[in-house]
Length: 470
Image (cartoon, rainbow, N blue to C red; front, side, top):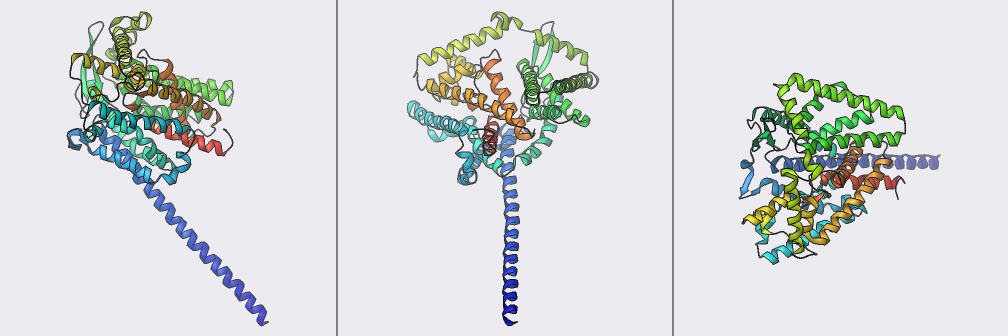
């Protein structure tokens, strides 16, 4: 009996210790999850503040309040802090950091650093001062904070932070476009004269990710279900882009939505699905049109202006003539001439002309050309090496994003961003009279490529774990 009692006691004592260990482990697990959630939210707030502060046209507060010294702003230090913090915590996302798709990206970023060093030596500028002037280039390194944020499951929280600001800024942008009064701080408003003596206000500034939310709602309707109340936000997010009178942006929206329809139909392989999606798009177009007519003052005037804008300059595309066509062709030739008469392999590098500003009339022409002509700008700035690296990334990511989209079945935020990446890469490569051709430009990667690339790496790793991709 004594032995049985002792055995029972030992068993109970062992069970108690086991239960205690499990409780302590569970408590620590909850603490870890809570801490991880807090760190993810703080990282998301940092990324949000960078975007909010960096460009006054995207925020709601004038950018002059953010200046620290000359052109250095608080957002610059946030950017550098985010990148350093992501490198410090690289072990958390080491699997993403070592991922195959990120290899070409790391090479390009390393090449940017090499060009910075070589340019500092070649042109004899102060590397510390010029470092702070290249904020557009260093923002390409936000890929790593995004990788860390995705690993901590904080991307959705970042979207929640951006959404209310997107709503407010899009509404204020709409008022600015209708009245010519800058309701958003630091926007540029110009009067443009269209054929037929029509004068419109062109507002140059951002709408704080309004286009991404617009496409996100449309994607949800196509892949999941149509929700009536979301039409309110779709109308709010798309009308500012209509009144921006940017023809290439209009074509880009149409191209992206058609890509959504096509890719979703290819995955489901059902004609009735495509028919249902077309009905949804028709309802959306009709609703936006009715809302535009009913809500926009003097809508007849703007509808007439839109018609004129659509057909304005069609000779540029047909015959490579006209003001815009002549300018772009001349700029393209100028950049190629600049590249051929400089270092063929390394290009002109980070020339003071585009770091500080142009000094002569010839430099002004080159400076404007860098802004307008994509692939030739990369070729002239970074030489044949930089161009081939950017071209490799463009082709490889088109192929890879297409495979990831075909394999996806969930229709979540990651699938949406991969689809937007695929549409952008194809659009930049095939459409647009400005010869964009690449998604890399003089100032590094185009806007939103940071999050696109980070999401592509994440989805690639997830599908590789599931055996969907080799």
